[in-house]
Every structure is written in C-alpha cells, then in structure tokens.
Length: 636
Ligand SMILES: CCCCCCCCCC/C=C\CCCCCC(=O)SCCNC(=O)CCNC(=O)[C@H](O)C(C)(C)COP(=O)(O)OP(=O)(O)OC[C@H]1O[C@@H](n2cnc3c(N)ncnc32)[C@H](O)[C@@H]1OP(=O)(O)O
Ligand SMILES: Cc1cc2nc3c(=O)[nH]c(=O)nc-3n(C[C@H](O)[C@H](O)[C@H](O)COP(=O)(O)OP(=O)(O)OC[C@H]3O[C@@H](n4cnc5c(N)ncnc54)[C@H](O)[C@@H]3O)c2cc1C
Image (cartoon, rainbow, N blue to C red; front, side, top):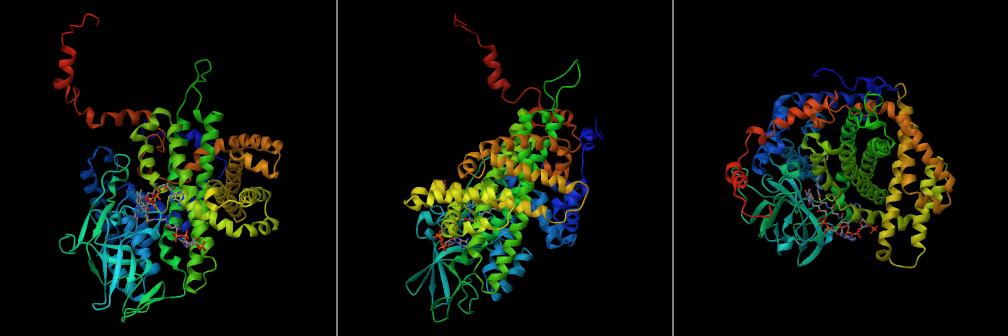
C-alpha cells in the first residue's frame, strides 16, 4: 500500500544515529545540506524525469539529453546556484552528457595548464557556457599510449599560428565525449613541431564549430562514433570522431606565442621552443585530476547499487516458512550476507579514500604552484592505482548486486542494468585499468627499498599485514632477474595489493578522527573490519606466504567475518539509508525507500509500450498465418 513503510521494521532495528551517519557520508553538515536540498529539487521537477529513457530511440534520447542539459543550466541560472550546488544538480540529474566533459575536463585543463592570459580569455566564456568544450586526446589508433598520438601542431612563425593536422586515419580523434554533436571547442592534444623539430605531445585549444550556426569550421570533419554498450546508458553522450585538415589555430593551451608560459613550455615570437624546467608530465595533469574524481564517482555508483540490493534483500522472502508463517528474508541467508556486506563496506571505504585523494590532489597542486614536484610521482601512482582498484571493484560490485536481486534485478525498472551499462566504461576511460596498474608497479619498483622502512613505523596490526604482503609480493618479483615486461602480470598483482593497503590504512585513519553520533563510529569500525578481513580472506594465499599470518589466523579471520556480518545485519537498511538517495536518483523499484516493491513492479510492467495493445503489432502478419497453417507433415 502506498504511504506504508514496508521497511519500518528494519529501520527500527538500527543501533546508530542515521542522521549523524548521513553527515559522515556527505562529508560535512554543509555538504549534506547541499546534497539533500539539490537532490530533492531535482527529484521534484518533472523536467528531470528519467523513467522513460529505455523506451526512446538514440536520436530521441540524445535530444532529450540536450533538453535536460539546457533545462539544468536554466535552473542553475534562475536559482543563482553556486558552483557547488550546480555540480550537485548535474550529478543528481544523472545522465552522462557533454556537460560532464565541459565541466569535468575542458575547464580543469585550462585552469591546470593554461597561462593567466589564456585563463582570462577562455574561462569566463566556458563558465557562462558561451563556448562548450571537450577533451580531445584519444585517437582511433592510440589511447593508452599518449606519446604515440599522431595529430600534429606545426608552428608557423610567419603567421604566429599553429597548424593542426590529422596526417593519417588512425590520427583521427576518436572517443572524446561531447565532441560528436555539441562541443564548439576542444582541447586537442597534438605533437608540437617548431622549426622542423618535434617536441612531443601538447594541448591546444581549437575551435571546432561556428558559434553562429554550429556548422563545423573550415578543415574540421566531426561526427558521432555510433551506438555504445547498452540501450539508454552512455548513448546520451555524443562521443565523437574528429579530423583536422590543416586547421589554423592561434590558441595553444600549452603555448602562447605572444606570452611566456608559466607551465609546460613556450614558443617565442621568433619561433624558438623553450622547454621550461618543469616535468613534462604536467601535460598529463588533467588526467590526474579526473582520476581522483572518478574514485569519488565509484563510491557513488557502488553505494547506489548496494542500496538497491540491500533494500530488496530485506523485502524479498524465499523458502523457510515455518507452519505457514512468513518465508525467510533473503538478507538473512549467510551466502547473501557474504556477497552483499563486503560491497556495503567497500562503498564506505571508497567514500573515505575518495576524500583522502581529494586532499592529496589539492596538496600536490599547491606544491606544484611553488615549483615543488616532489610528491608528483606518488600522486600519479595513487590516483592511477586507486582509480583502477575502485572502478574494477565497483563495476564487478554493480553486477553482483544485480545477481543478488535474482530475476527482478535484470529488469530495467530495477535500475541495475542501466547503472552497470553507464558505469563499466569507467574501467577504461581516463586510463585502461591494467595500464594504470603498470604505472603503479613502476612506481613500486622504484620505491620498494623504502617499503621496509615504512614497515617499521608504528602502524596498526592490520596495516602491518597488508604492508608485509606488498613487500613480499614485490620482493618475490624483484628478486627474480627478469625484465619488467616478463613480470608485469605479477607486478600488477603487487600494485593491486599496494592500493588495497592504501584503502585499508586510510579507512583506519578515518576512524581515528572524531566521529560524532550515537553508534556511528562503532558501525564504521565494523565496516572497516569487514573490508579488511574480506580482502584478507580473498587473498589469504598472499598473506599466508608472507608468514605474517598462520592458517589458524586465516580461519579465525573467517569466523570473525561471519560475526561481523551478524553485527551489520540489523543495521543494513539504516546504513544504506545514510546515503540519503531519493527514489528518483536511485531509479529503482527494487530499491524504493518504502520497500513497496511488488505493486510497483506490476504497475510498471503495464506501462511498457509493448502493452499498449493486447494483440501485438505483427500478429496478423506473422503469427496468425503460423497458427492457421494446415499441417501436412504426417509426423506432427
Ligand atoms: C552513479 C553513476 C556514476 C558513474 C559515473 C558516470 C559519469 C558519466 C560521465 C563521465 C564523464 C567523464 C568521465 C569520462 C572521461 C574520460 C576522458 C578520457 O578518457 S581522457 C583520455 C584518458 N587517457 C588516458 O588516461 C591515457 C592513459 N595513458 C597515460 O596516461 C600515459 O600514456 C602513460 C602514463 C600510460 C604512459 O606515459 P608515457 O609518458 O608514455 O610513458 P611513461 O610510463 O614512461 O611515463 C613517463 C614518466 O611520467 C610519469 N607519469 C606518467 N603519467 C603521469 C601523470 N599523469 N602525472 C605525473 N607523472 C606521470 C611516469 O611515472 C614516468 O615517470 P618516471 O619517473 O620516468 O618513471
Ligand atoms: C565511454 C568512454 C569515454 C571516453 N571519453 C574520452 C574523452 O572524453 N576524451 C578522450 O581523449 N578519450 C576518451 N576515451 C578514450 C579512453 O581514454 C581510452 O579508450 C582509454 O584510455 C584506453 O585506451 P585504448 O582505448 O587505447 O585502450 P588500449 O590501450 O588499446 O587497450 C586494449 C588492451 O591493451 C592492453 N594494453 C595496452 N597497453 C598495454 C601495455 N603497455 N601493457 C599491457 N597491456 C597493455 C590494455 O590493458 C587493454 O587490455 C573514452 C573512452 C570511453 C570508453
């Protein structure tokens, strides 16, 4: 029945202050206030409805996305929302669109790599959306290998301009989000050529389309690369293809021929290339920034799937009826708990590692501004490794949540298929996860000697076990006199172990902070222990081989896990309520707040266009002749 909370009995079991946990999850009272207010604003506005996406054609879907993006911008302007509120609004609209790349990459790239002069020119236009940008780095032939990009940018000292060109088919820009049909400008990455000499890959701001009639400019061939995985999902985004035919470009992002560059390099008016004394890797800076935001995205996506699966696991009953009594809630089965609760713990773990990574990025950015590059390698390794670890775990976790919901998890109305289809490219974009782990492995090879010293420092026992595992995995590999390439598969395992160590240790550090609210810290301690012991159980071979734990320890850890699952059980619904997601944002009948699932499933089925007629289109043409055919074959 509408209005009845079918999960009230579950919510009454909670042993902690849910409102206080909502603040912890949001990050602060202010952050909670903004999230709560904006999510409800979006949920209550029919202009942001999303329950019809699966019934739209690609063109209808895309046009609807443009409508929503424009409507969101009007809402932001009319309500004079702050940058923080506007970002939250775009988040809760929950639709991959060109705006993600405009705000998430184009603007950060100019802020991170542009000169003062370029920032003054481009940022006001971008902030007012008087230009729409994309990040055009990947090409048809190269994505991971950035130094293999083929697009060229040749400096013409006669005209003080750069000529951008796509010399081969494989140099076509391919994948950039927003490029296909919307972006008016791109930050295009190209090989810089000055005076016949090549100076590697740099970024250039290039105008693609007319600001008058949106037609591609002279020398620009641009379009969409076609349908992607899933039906609705990421097809709201116009990932594009772009070819330059000797395009004149006067706005290089890494260069301004009339201004000295503070950052990467400069080309003087006389056409001289001068590499400043900053690491050339700064040209990769935007990727570091986006990778740390993707870790925060992972906690959002995983928490969303876990919220759906947890609520539905409390609603769903199957088997176990005694004397005609109610059947057992599937959330009470130990197998369901052993699959679901580690994902719940991971969602919280990724939330806190995302908070730490945001601090790390801010710290390294501050240091860069003081020409202190000492922490850049670690920042790169951390953002690359944690992006890889959290997106892999989240993609796998969303699929596990679908399975935890049985058959109904496969319905679009569960919200899980769409969430999975939208989320999985995160394992590839912003760096293929294996390629990024290889970067971490390289970093570990260079710093393995320091691992030992870090072991001796006063660390909680749990962390010591994880640190010993990494050191052991590295020493087993480094000790073998074979090349990096030969050992790369093993080194990637050590890289994963290193990243898991970081997540566990930052979760433990989080618990050393003051955390207000009755029972809140205790719940987080349970989740932290579940995360750490679940991984110890999953990788117990590694831990046993270090000698750091014995088989008896491993067995005790497994017993403790079961006990921890029992401690979480009465609090599970409250722990997912703490995410404070509206039913609109969840987009899931299985995960609806009131748990009134079956009537909503039944009602939703009849709304499918296929049920607009009792007799389906095609019956008279195809089925009736089949049914009416005279069967002349004696056998039948
Ligand atoms: C609820 C649902 C939510 C789900 C979210 C839904 C949202 C939907 C909307 C999403 C919107 C946006 C997200 C999507 C955006 C995607 C955008 C992109 O994909 S942009 C393109 C990304 N491309 C890449 O990441 C390419 C990966 N490749 C590389 O980074 C490099 O090629 C490489 C690092 C692999 C290799 O670099 P290279 O220079 O060729 O060689 P080396 O390995 O030798 O490195 C040299 C040296 O540099 C150091 N290094 C490398 N990278 C960095 C860096 N980024 N920062 C600092 N230092 C770096 C490296 O360690 C080496 O150092 P040494 O000291 O020499 O060892
Ligand atoms: C949805 C989506 C949105 C995107 N948006 C953008 C965007 O806005 N802008 C942009 O510039 N790009 C974008 N991209 C492109 C994305 O950044 C690249 O696809 C990504 O960096 C992976 O590169 P690749 O496609 O070349 O993969 P490849 O490197 O070709 O990967 C193929 C396989 O080769 C393996 N491999 C590659 N190199 C090595 C190695 N050295 N050692 C071991 N294994 C290796 C990989 O692990 C993988 O298994 C997007 C991609 C997607 C899917």
